[in-house]
Amino acid sequence: MYENRSLDRAFSTIDLFNEETEKLTASQIAKRFGLTLGGIYPTLYNLTRLGYLARDAAKKYSLGLKFLERANLLLHHLDLRDKAKSPLKDLSRVYDANTRLSILYGWEVMHLHLETKHRRVISRESVGERIPAYCSGLGKVLLAYLDEDSLSDYLKAIQLVPLTSKTIIYLEELKSELANVRKKGFAFDKGEFHKDVRCIAAPVRSYQGEVIAAVSISMPRSKFAKQAVSKVIEDVKNRASCISRSMGFHVSYSEVAQ
Image (cartoon, rainbow, N blue to C red; front, side, top):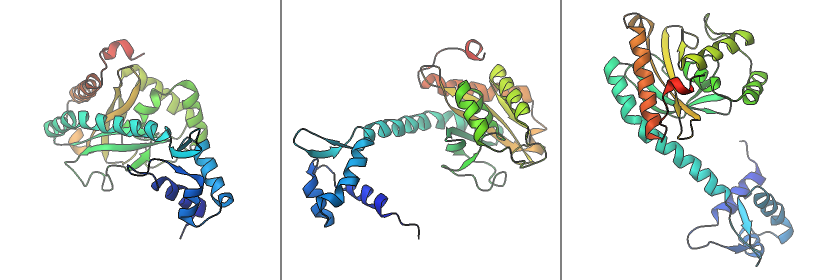
């Protein structure tokens, strides 16, 4: 068991607040836990310092604005997911292939939505699943559009572990690959994550032009060999562009690829 009493108390404190109990004094909170004011103070201090609680002039505590900030982030991702469902389902149907919508979560790629036709392609795929960024089409797209400082931090933090014989394991080669992805507006996974899977990914942009997610299509190597690759690339970029437009982005890929 990995129990952390301080963390448990912090979450339990947050749970005290609801529609019927919007504000509480330190004494009321301490009483709920059978603690003295001195015992509850570190929890209240840190939650307030981090923005998860607020204290008014009457010294009453309430939920802080940090929750609104996090809620807006969650709602944004839910909105993005809803807008991506139809284009990804259509792309999946056209090619009888797996499609995904994913974001960069920390230094990994996290799936927000999947349309799965071939479960045997990647058996452990699921919404919320996280995969390495450096060796996946989705990840290479998301890394390619990071600012210089963020990309530098990423490259310092990770190890390029070979998952297949195609995985890029040299930093300079990865940098060159990412520059190429940014130039062309799409990424190609040539079996770098799973040796028998091929993947093409493209960026999704916000109304401000920022790359906020990536979409991809993947299929078995044998199936991919029968496709007109340029057409697949065009279709993936078109679906990504469709989702971007639904998020308020209206600039063509040719104007922002550089």
